[in-house]
Length: 437
Image (spheres, rainbow, N blue to C red):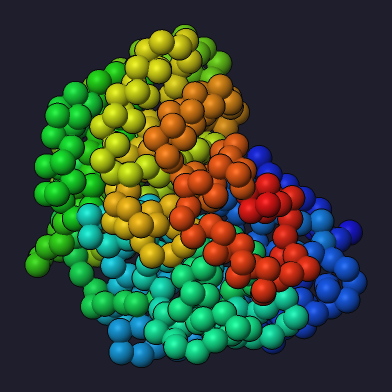
């Protein structure tokens, strides 16, 4: 048997029959052919930042640690090996005077894992990471290495290249093993970041203006209070004014991790104290502002382990969803220590993007890892699905293929492409059997 794989949250694990760490697309292709000959299924894991068992396999598990670095650069694009982390990519791009237009708030994921599960940040005009992809290099089920381009006009296995590109960008690894990703990049830029507490009541009364007035809006609502921390990030001509080292440590490490983790630990032992602890946290929030390189503003440090469920809904339903979740928490006796995070993105044309075909809003619910609360997730999920919500592919949910086919207009088209590229389900696992059928 191979080594045991565990994800970051420690809620998923598997001990596959074999583990390999290929260093090239050719080695991935050889591994896929060997697995097929042995009757084993294949999955490529990343850094384990998905909460679902999307990367789990009892067959051959590929680890991407040797597939790292920027392979090639051009005018407005870079090609990164699949196992390169988003943080590594950011630092290398910054060194070259370049940047991604948008990203999520965690940079520990591999670039392939991030796009395959639909990782997104928040943006009025610029979507998630898959929307910044120009091409993918993939290994198919028979070991063939192909490159799929967004501007391609040919066919691969009889599938129009543009269709395959739109299917493959967010595909959960179900169409092939991604070995390299080509991203659209732009000259490095600064973001002016304003952090400010606001009441949820005030936010609900000005949602449209807040979204329209900021390139990147993100806010965190503390349950059992009326307090939110808003983060508004907008491009700036400079000069850069990064936070002082002590201020950065206090906000990003001590307050948001060390102290917050201690409060979660107390709340885990004494749940009745959580509303008072949240009120205390709300009282400590204060306004601040700084200007820094975009990737440093976009990303945050997350050390307190949690479980997460996130749903994307049409942006027009955001106010209703927030009110219903607030009312739900008032009716039930749950004690929720983690904030609820809200973000927005424009519509995407990647078939299985959670933002496909509609401007979207995201509600992310978290619970402290040692104290899971399935009923809380279930209650919020009922609201989200009633509003036609789409669960984040890398975060906990209970939806299967029958529901997902209703909320993704190109779901059947995706399955048809999968039937062509992987008819024997070399890249399947039990989780994909549930969400894709």
